[in-house]
Length: 67
Image (cartoon, rainbow, N blue to C red; front, side):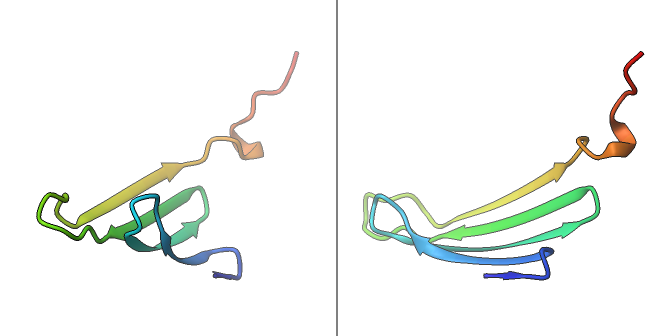
């Protein structure tokens, strides 16, 4: 789900048939993402929390003028 191209909500299943969910926020040049993944079973990994931060340099303000 996307709201005003700045708030994102996600939920789904991966190839191991476990579910994950996450959220993302876009604020100007920065993108912040958080994901939670649930793993089940005694031989599985523990639950995983991922945090991703991205800085976008492709905006016109950072592009060099050609000479």
